[in-house]
Length: 271
Ligand SMILES: [Zn+2]
Ligand SMILES: [Zn+2]
Image 1 (cartoon, rainbow, N blue to C red):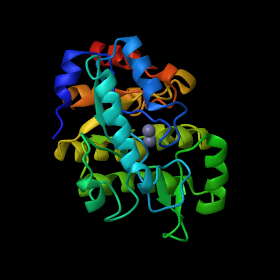
Image 2 (spheres, helix red, strand yellow):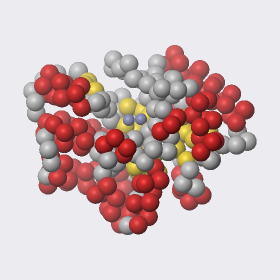
Image 3 (tube, protein in one colour):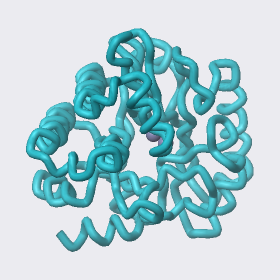
Image 4 (cartoon, rainbow, N blue to C red):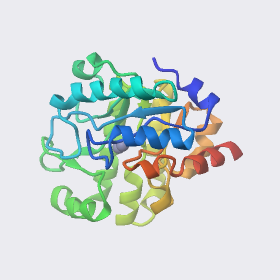
């Protein structure tokens, strides 16, 4: 088991959630490494979207996994004296047996694993997995097309997928645990302020704590949407229960490697 405590106690300058040319990132691994070094980072973890059983242009293929490992080895040889580089993946939880706990992902030589939900089953056709993670316009169109405009179903299904992922295990860090909250609240203002919504987040949090996973504070949307995942209003709960956390920028561009991270750390520390 990867010990993140050591990193977070040692420095604020790290990122363990980074997307590159191996999935939907907009720069090469090497460009991220040089930017990280320039920023003074001492730890950088790569997390391509994992190979997946559903149609997804954002995810890497199984065929490119070895190439990814080889490139990381090369970068370690070149930059390893300046920065610690980690091999990881952001692994999609799709359905029972098709997620981080599967033999395929368990056998890969990864330093740690992030488990995330980006897909949920369509309301009338559970075998059709729909991407609910994208930009709001695409999300809105899919809510009509695949979910009969039933936003409550979508929110509840997202959290039940997260719960199932946590129950199945096989990963170290829970990725953006309440990410559905932003798109859902654009679709239906203040849905994320409702009691039942809050309960879904708290139940998930308690389940994560029972399983002793590390919670990611994902800062990717801070600059544009003024939102962290989990939402700022849950930081007090993380702190109160002394939850193990890592603060990740989920960067797809090198220039965004530290985006929102120091703000989140500061807010956590003042609580
Ligand atoms: Zn993600
Ligand atoms: Zn990501």
